[in-house]
Image (cartoon, rainbow, N blue to C red; front, side, top):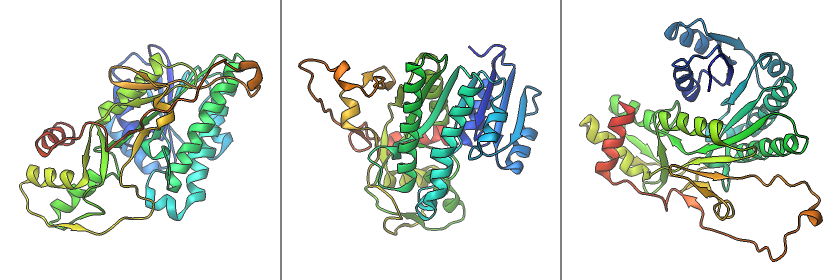
Length: 330
């Protein structure tokens, strides 16, 4: 699949990018190009993974010329660069737009210009029924990606664009679990916004598996979703205290800017047409053009399913959660 191929990972110094890099290096790949803005993280990654097949590019996906340059002679692109901290995006929504929407558009346009064959764009559960700037920008990012997938399909351009959407990656930088672990080790109170809040849970390995599934089997415009269990954040905190054998106090501080009580990975409208795979849902894109009269189907009706959310998926109890966290976070 990757033998003698060249791959670009934008945002490649992040949690997903680093994991994907290690995974790709197990293959007979020709080159992996890491694009990011942070030279310190690139230096750290370069020192930890000394492999001549990995090349590092300082650049910014907000700048089209930067993306045009780094996608030259690239076969496949994994677009993981993003602003993803919900409170930060609430205070700087235009920055979220510039990176998540405009930046992704730049990556896709540059990739098409340079004859890239496959592009996988990474999204989030916060793009579903979005109420915050991060989720809104990611929802727009998905719309941009699918719009461009429709365009290249109709123009018969030899390129494929897919979107992957997943929930909370357990040990990713800036997420809840590393935040709580740091507080436990510092003997501080564990601050939670609402104990009944639920979040999907998946490992970094799961995130790589999802992206590879979309890459291998996805059709143009498809959105792939990882089926994931969930848990209340109260149980997540309690499970970590059991693992560390600590008795830190749990402190309820109320919701932060832009937070939701439950997250969704699939809307009710998407679920009505989602293809149920063993580990995933695949949502095909509507690749028709805007001339609806031509494509009108007789007796077609509007179908609505049940949204796939963190409060109606498999809910882990405390013991199951302890086992899951021990397996993937330690």
